[in-house]
Length: 325
Image (tube, rainbow, N blue to C red; front, top):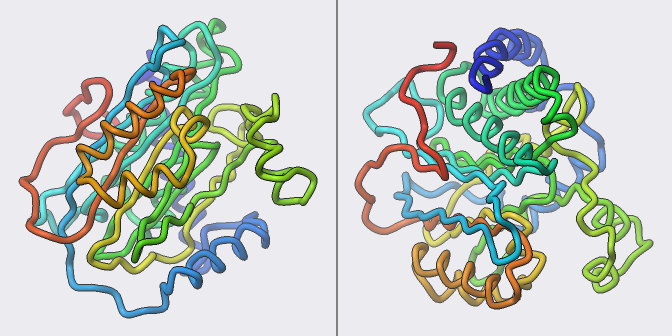
């Protein structure tokens, strides 16, 4: 049933792309808050992103997910795909995502899976600039989740976070909604490059809570934006590609990690260990802290010898049929 909804969303994606094509080439469509643009611009300047980009870099990465200790179901969904470098039609050469579902009674698992599978099937099948394509993928995922919930009352109220990292021509693009996170480790400094769409994060940004108070707040799981909860969606998007450098390391994770493992620990582990070992150690750290939620981590290091091409990886098998089939 979920894939029937995804197939029906393809027409919607085409309509969205037609609308997006009329926007400014450097924009991400109408309705992007000025504060969001300013946040992205400040982050990119602080990372020195006006530097000349590096030559084409290799990617070495790993994604792992664990249900944790307390919860029976794993409502997280992770996936990453390396495109064949000989495929000239591929817009992105790498895409990775983490989606953290919510809704209970297995509905969260359904929402995160629909979102993840929709993005995986569409991200290299659509035409347009990278921000346009990523926005359209998020819009299609949102539409598919809503349609499935309407057809299945037991899934009413379900939704999911979704954080997508995509690489194209040695530029990085981010699409994000919810409180899963994306980090960049560059030149020994760990930077959060996503923005939490949670109530406590909003209160911290507005000066009404300190970060320490937010960490202890009973409302820290309250999400202000997610896929599947509203007819329209407003993801956080990079308006321009982030130039990559050899030695950059990206981290994607659900809040099952960041709620119990602090940034200093994430920095230490990611800086010391290769991606596969770092993923395992971070999950072990979250489990040692009680593992109250599902835990998902993806780590991607740039540079070094190119890894062998592999198929799409996810928490559940992915179909091989093309979009809309």
